[in-house]
Length: 237
Image (cartoon, rainbow, N blue to C red; front, side, top):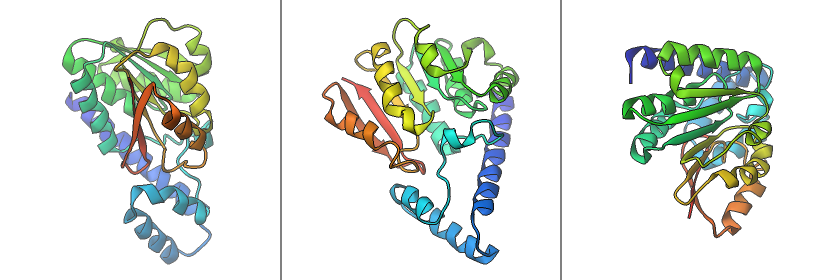
């Protein structure tokens, strides 16, 4: 990964963490001492319990819908980014689809892996026009813009313009839309296609129907990985 990309990603991770902290503090009505205590509890908690903890104490979970139209990036963690990078290197996908790119943190990890491989292409979609502008700017800074076709607009409209299959998909849109979007996505998957979906823990209630659908399907094998937000790893059989 290029030095310029590493530096940019570090800046974007720090920005996202700062935004998340400030947002949580603004939502919490207690004292700074009480907030610090809750924060320590949260950080030391098993990932699978974090979503319920957030709701119990009045915090909004990390969800793309709540950040729409704001400067909130809700970026993936650095650990999650490295996972996507290494998964791409291992899977060597010919085509990647990203649904919900925001400022492009996850996009940069995926596209940088394609750049390292020297082959492959990617489509990144983002509904928010302001974030889409920043996404394109970040792709240019990282030198991977030529590998990524950016779709600005509704991801459901994007499906009407797609053809062929995708080997790797990262889905990070409004969690209440996961099931409907996944069902549209199925036509563009093939045996061996991998779908990574974020916020299985931090939006547990909203994704319940999606998880039930995966559990009942014989066409997919799926398991939840213990990243802080909870990540669903789904393979088409």
